[in-house]
Every structure is written in structure tokens, then in C-alpha cells.
Length: 556
Image (cartoon, rainbow, N blue to C red):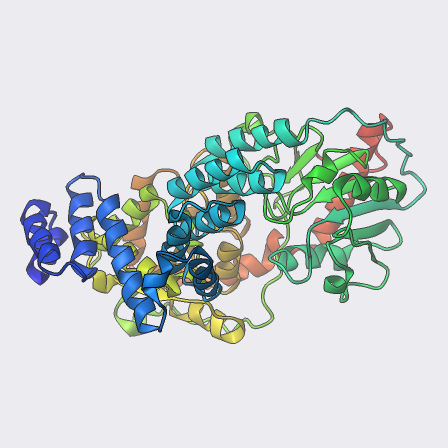
């Protein structure tokens, strides 16, 4: 089969197809020839999903049998199959878990949890169309606002048009409530502004590096801050003057009543359409001004939310039609970002010593769209001295690794050019940045935390920033770090720029010396400046709501 794989490297699918087909027929229990047959079929433009599914199922059965799982029982006992799937999912073996959950559902015992779990395990592999299908079936049979949130989020990976349509559909179905009694807007002049933040948790979540500079930077002489998490115990480490009011035990109406009684002036949704969100609270308009940002830079779809915060990106297209809210420009960046305390000293471009260029993506596998993968593959195919490190906890799954190899091989990329890394934390995680020469950003769903972590650790990030909400966001991050030359606007330009950077290691090293200083000295790290602009923005929003001139002028 090696010769057949070599044929795929030069685009000769016709020579490879019969070889892999024969190998699969001769070894019916071996998944390997089926992965490669799927790659050949994809290269030839033939549908390959059935063959790829067969490969994954065979692969999973072999692994599970070796781990002592009763694979025969998986097909007849849905409760047992579900238990196995939960264990696999907890070990980040999402592709293996999807096989087990599929078997649990194949008995005909369908429930909302099973459909959701299968959909999530597919989504985490990047099998978005399948995930969306199962979520649609689940929503049709077991309708709920919480389940619909998962569908909204999944659509984001298909493209922004899909996401916007689904977010608006969510709002029309679950947030179409009678208008509440108007909030009494008290002029903010001469008193502290009352600000509220809503999320399931703040300290122990992906919000931490974004929200910490804000909560710790707020001026207690100018504002009162209240957090509304699910539980108070998760928020013990914030400044003592910040009030914590847990709402996890309250339904949306009761939570809205609590917030209204607290007299909050500006209420911020920090979670978006992510599991555990409380958008139903915002649908009841408990505060005169409601804002969405931090965890999402897209629309919520809710007309009851007044604003979405964005950074000011000069020359960005007008994308206001993508929002149910009004865009509010909060200054040069969307939010500040606090670098990890585990950061190590910068190093020179690793390729200078290694002799091989290491490209990398630490983004979720769901972000590796077909178009993005095709562009990355073109770079790898034209730079055989390069390799690509894909690092995320789900890449620990052997099935996902083999599927990803097959997808790249279909574009002529040698399997030896792909490396995989799983989950890591602390110094082990940041040390990984020291082996990366160039990060590749994804599209249509770009990186956020991963991009900022790379920049803060001195690694350049190449982005494809099309005229979309995600594209403008990606461009804004790089321009804020003083790296506009790492922004491209078409897949072809992305490939050309990547090959240019790979072909000039000394130039790439000179660029690298600017990355960390650009991050550290730019607006992404200007925590105090951002918080002052934010507080001024909130006062201006409240002034607009009350039709009273703002105490301080701000660009809105």
C-alpha cells in the first residue's frame, strides 16, 4: 500500500483506488486500508463517508475489544453502550465515543441525551454536518431552549450565515416574550454605576484571562459590580468589594426579578449560545442596558440585548446586518487578554536549529473546515520540509488522528508531515509554543484564546481574514499586536504568504522578535486603559437609554 499512498502524494488517485479497494476486501477487519481508500476516493471526488465510517467503526471495535469492552454487548444493550461512550468521552476519545453512542441509538431507544451526546461527539471531531443533523432531530422531538442552544453553536462552524439564521430562530422561538414593564433609568451622574455580569462561571472557565483584567481593574469608587454565576463557590478569589449573586438555582423569570431588584444599570452576557447560558434572563430585559461580549463576538439574535462590544478595526466592512444588536466600538480591541503566568522567555525561530519548519494549530478540531484544510495542505505539499502540529485534547483519539491523516492525504500531504498533541497545562503547555515556528489560524471560525496565547508567547499567527465577523475579529487581534503583515484576505493569499514565510527562516526569525513585544506593549495588554474606556462606554449607553447627555464623551 505504500506505493499507492505515494501515488496520492502526486495526485494519482486512479492508480491508488484499486489497490486500496483490493486491500480492504482482503482484510475485512483491518481499518487501515479503508482509511486510505477513503483518502483516494476524496482525491478522486467520490463520496467517501461510508468507507470512512466503516474504517472508524472497525478501528473503534478493535481498540475497545483490546481494552476489555464486550463489543457484542454494545450492539444489544443500549445502557451498556451508553456507559462505555460516557467513559470514552471523558477520556477525550470522542470518535470512539461516537461509535458507541451510535450503537446505543441503533436499538431504537432514542432520547434527547443520547442524540445530544452523539451530536457533540461528532462536532468535536469536526463532523459538523452530521452533528447539526442529529441536533435538528433532537430539537424536533425534544424541544427545549437549552437543546436549541447547542444547535446554534454548532452552526457557527458551518459559517456565519447559518449561525445568524439559527440565532435569530432561537430568539424568535424562546425569547419572544411580552415586553416587560419599562426599566426606570436613573441618571448615572453623581453616583456609582451598577454593572452586572452573567455567566455560569467566571474564575474557572475560558473567561478567566479576559474577565480578570476587567474585574480587577474596575474602579470601586466609580462602579458597583455584581457577578451572577451559577454558584458562588466558583467565584471566591475576586476583589472583596465585588458582589456575587448565584442564580443557578433560579429559573429565568426569578433570576430576572433578582437582577431587576438589584437595580443593575448595565447587564453583560459573557457566555453567548454556549452550554449553561442564561439568555432567557436577558429576554426578560431586567436592566435598562444589556450588552453581549467576551465569550462571543457574534450576535445573540436577541433584540432585547442592546449592544455587542467590538474593537475598532480601521477599514473593516459594515457588518451590522449580521447583528440583532447595535455594534458598540470599545476602543482598539474587543477586550484585554492577560498572558499566562507560566510564560517562558522568548526563543528564536525553532527551525533555525531543527532544520524543519513546524507549523501548528491549537484550535478545536471543529474549526478545521474543508476549505481551511485544503489551504493548509497546499502549504504542506509545497513545503515538504515542513510539518503540522495539531494540538487539542480531542486529538488524543486514534480515530480522529487517522481520519485527519486521510483528509490531508487526499490533498497530497504525506502522513509523516502531521503531528498530534493532546491536552496539557501550565509550563508543559506553554513550552509547546517554543517548538512552533508559525501558527496557522482557521476559518470561517478563527481562533481567539489560542491566537492570543500564541502571540503572548512570541509565536507569529497567520490569519485568513475575510469580510466576515470572524475575519474582522482575527484581523483586529493581529493589528493590535502590530502584525498587519500576517493578515491575508483569501485562501490563495494565505498560502502564498505562508510559503513566503517558510522560505525565509531568517526573515521569520526577525518577525518573531516583534511578536511578544507587540503583544505586551499594545492595546491587548492595556488593561487599565480598556477598563476606563469600558466604564465610560457603559455610562454613555445608560445616558442614551435615558436620553441624558453622557457624563464623559466616548466613541459609540
